Image (cartoon, rainbow, N blue to C red; front, side):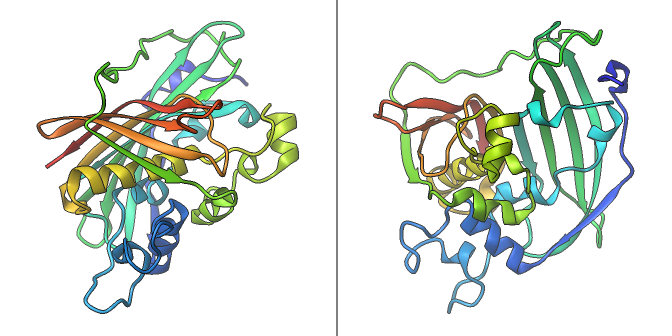
Length: 291
């Protein structure tokens, strides 16, 4: 059974997911929070019992709380050894609590066939609400690229990016250093794909020289920079974030987030190993909305 182009609109059964304050702490350190100054910055995200500081969550934690709602199981056979994360978006309706239970309703929003021997692109959307109150918490947008799996009879579709980084110098630029063991920490938030930890899987099935960093870890590092630079570190001001993944990141790479700001929004991109022979854009065509 190949990918079924008629699965667009298919929905998965609602899924409940719970998390606790320790999960929020683990996610924070998984995206590098506190690494620059462990006892002097980001304590509101990395500790739960610092005097005078109330624990908070990063807006991007929604991608691990609400991810994998089951809709991909409706699209047919996927060769997971060929899968890369294509894009990711989150829209916040309110700040994410440090612990809670949500109901996730996920559907298939698009299936695109780029042709025989080319890529298949599968998109999903999720509505995530708090179980206790039924209040909307956040929405997710997600796509995967299945390399070389096109030619199944679907529509080609228009998947071109909607925004592009300007030619001018960015208004803000932040650089974070990932650790060589970053993927081993991040995977404890729930993404145990061996592409990020198993050298055999990464080289023999994934086609990479070594395990790569989770795309959503790079997304989290990028979201940290956006939160601090655009929102003054206040999650209530962070409204949405959409990214396209353009190149892999390896644990130990530096990540430089560049932002071009207009009123209430910023176009952004993330560059790995800036000013190095290995420099490459790893997140592009990004758009963040904030207040």
